[in-house]
Length: 70
Image (cartoon, rainbow, N blue to C red; front, top):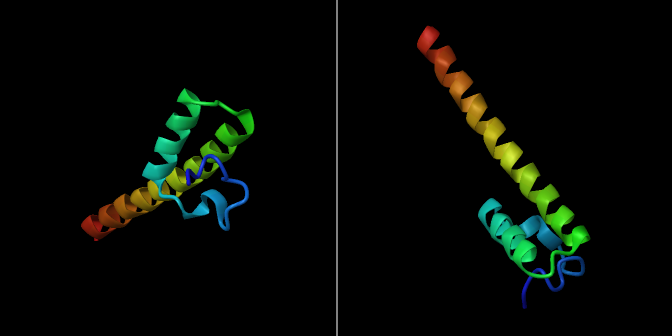
């Protein structure tokens, strides 16, 4: 079963997908049915995961820089 066919009824919906899976799902939806509601939902989840990853990377850089200054 394709997550895009039943994304709103599956337990957990898009929440169980990785950043890469969401990026792929977003591209498949763009290339396929291009439903606005689905595109926005996938993008919202993808953006959240990407932001969390990028913030963690920034925190790591800040911690490394702080250790080097000490």
